[in-house]
Length: 340
Image 1 (cartoon, rainbow, N blue to C red):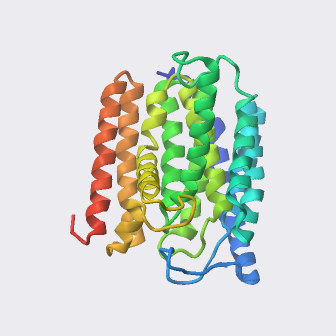
Image 2: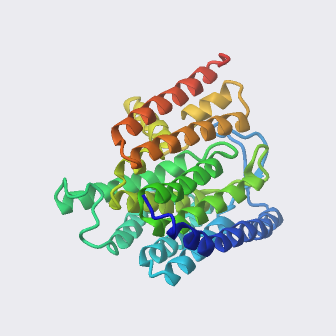
Image 3: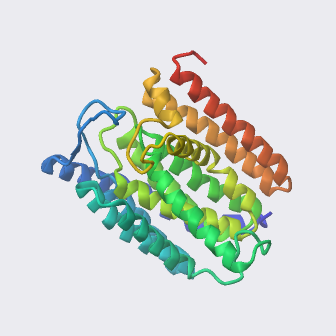
């Protein structure tokens, strides 16, 4: 538990960054939206889409620079070399993902680039900063961390399939990480989580249903990269349970869907509409209804994470399993058009 006297100083240093993050995201996103409309860079509906109208895609050209620059500014001012690394990595992934948005790059080069950037940032971690707290050999700890982070970056991209869902998840995870620092230590993560949360929340003004703008890979991939990094830092601070609980719904939906598609012999890296949340929309629910259901589940998961960091990790973890299963069940029922 943090000392109460340290909270005002941390908040006083952080809230101006949050205000700048909100204002800058709104201003820059307006500029990017005008550019995309002028250049007619649109996401055209197809059989794998959950939208029906051509919509500008490339909101990440606004959200990623704002998030990255503020992370680097905050990290540089407080000796947070990892925050600087996360910001630089996000910019690299934005550039590569924008090319993918425009020209559909092959899968292996994309995954390779993700792995290189992840490895470079992990190299900044002290050797003693281990996700599994010494239970595993250090080399195995690092290997699992690389693979988990790589999966998280890509699942974050996979889950960006309806209006508002990525903004909701980014707001929830960034805010959740910031809140965990207040209850479980690692106070230096508070401004970083808050910055990401505010940028994701501000983007909702443009992406809420019906969306005026889509994030695109240039936004979802960097968001997944930065949030994955913050969750790893939370875990290395001794809060592994919270780091697993906060993204539990996203982890479950993406992983279950991937396994199902793999068992059916499908190309798992191709776009589709088979996630639980996508099927709920196909079942007749609006994008905003599904996104709000995810928000409700995430708020409960944040509560479970608080329980975990305040001394009851098994109780918090058990609660997270129940919440995640209930949310998946609700979305599955909606997919069949059954009122919940």
